[in-house]
Amino acid sequence: MFDNLQRQSELLRMEYEFEKATYLEAVQRAPMNGDVAEGDCWYPIRLGNTSYNIANQLVIDVFYDGAKPEASGSDFEPGKIVNFFSFENGKMRVLNYNCVVSRIQEFHMEVAVSAPALMALQHLTSRTKIGVLLGIDDYSYQVMQHSLRQVKGRNDEGFVALRSVLLGEQQPSFRDLHYAPMPWLNASQNAAVGKVLNARETAIVHGPPGTGKTTTLVEAISETLKRETQVLVCAPSNAAVDWISEQLYRRGISVLRIGNPLRINDVMMQCSYEYRYANHPDYLELFGVRNTIREMKSRPRLGDKEHNQIRKLQHREMELEVKIREELFATSGVIACTLIGSANRLLERRRFGTVFIDEAAQALEAACWTAILKADRVIFAGDHQQLPPTIKCIEAAREGLDKTLMQKVVKSKPSCVTLLDVQYRMNRDIMDFSSRHFYHGKLKADPTVADRLVSPIDTALMWLDTSQCDFGEQQSRSLSRSNQEEAKLVMKTLMDYVKLIGMEHLLREQTDFGIISPYKAQVRLLRKYLKNNKMLKPLRHQITVNTVDGFQGQERDVILISMVRDNASGQIGFLNDLRRMNVAITRARMKLILFGNAETLSKTKFYERLVEYVQERGDFVQVQGLPTEEAAAH
Image (cartoon, rainbow, N blue to C red; front, top):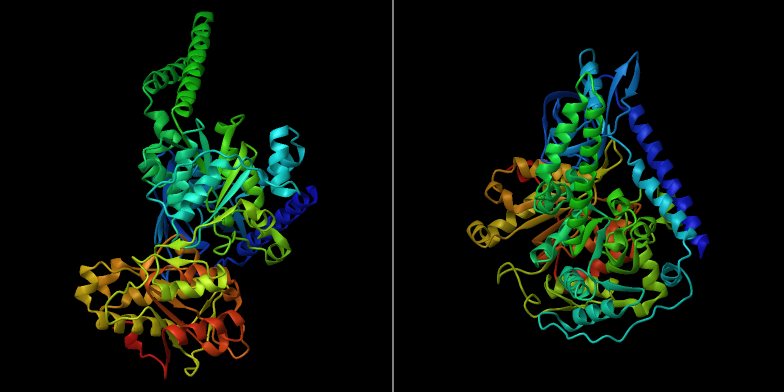
């Protein structure tokens, strides 16, 4: 049992070393001369004004100050760690300060900095050009390694039983509590809630695309709170935590959101610990006490009387801090944070009856243990047939780092699992291929969506086969791939589709579109073409272009997928991750249009079957010739 934990620790170390080496390589390849505006690096940059953000953190405006590339795209996101750098004496020097992105908009971002970091930056910019690049989150690795050690070391009876079910041969056990089914849930959703309530150690809500996993999980948490005073709700990403927290908040459940305010969205900011702390009735007194202490300490000479007064004020400061903190926790039914965030000092020595882990199929096992260590039982929710955890080291993934704890429990403890089997998103022709390949044909389309189309003259499925076109693929400097002619074909097809359905109809019905590619370079190219396309301008706010990962958890009326790969050898790289393609396909509500070289892709069995399925159930069109330049910028 512990061999697995030791192996996880080794694989984590491998992933960390790979990420560190990749970072150092990025540092080495950053040119001393010339402009760079890649996803992970800007050089040169210009610093702007300093101010304080909503979380009362010192931030500075950062502008990319070089030549703007035609196709822009960035891996910089709010909450990401960045480092500033310069070139001195022919060598790159990275400032030893981890800073955090607060906001970003194309070539301008706001970065949270410490006072020492700001001083170092201002000194540096007075004599040389500087740049900024993505940094490494050492803290997360440290937390996960510490959690794995704790899991092995714990010997209290309750946790040992839970650990034995999750890792060992012990089978899960269930109570026989009465649960009255909710009329607004379907049979499988009610079964999932019932299993959650009766599980002594663990239960799994397996939610394929569009099956109402969040609805079911909210109901399960609400019902659990009728039996427990407080639960911990976690997810691997801040976006996922905010999403489930928002649904709980709208249900009327008191949520206390723990985490870095820079990584919490605007809706949930009012539930953040910092916001609620600052708005507590006793905070004004605490603020006054702190100011008085600071003012007194700044005086040149203090006598015994002043020292005694300061001690009394510090005692009162501590009393108020504890009072506010405990009242915030006592009045919150749900404590919400990321899995790594459950190691926050605010949660030290706090235990919960139940921890719910949403999107558990995207979470590293060690991250899950960080939260599980705080609870007597764990409920997983997610879909192991969709996106896996993001792992950069291919060898670590191949050796098992990408196998999640939820995935292992699904396989070894099937009695814990409830499959949600009715989906409310997709036309049945879009759904059926995914159902057959990933869910043993068990999914059913609810009658309200089964035959839904954008227009009566439309169909649900289309593949534009570029086998006869000799498009060819290109590899970028960052090793991502693009296919310029296929990108033009995507734009031409979208324009033709708009003409077929009618611009007025699409605007009136607010029909939304998603353009997806597994490759960032292709996404940047598609965004460039969309930006330059005059005909599609009225629909621009209804069209989103992103990677598969960027569309996780989202849906659109119409989805267009650019596969990119076009070669004689059948090499498809990223497309071999079939779970990613499952995500891409199942984002579509009413129309799915696939673009790709069927000969290249069909050398892989999955895509051969997908081609056959579209030929059977949709429109399979062989494209002849190259699209014109007008297709990209009509």
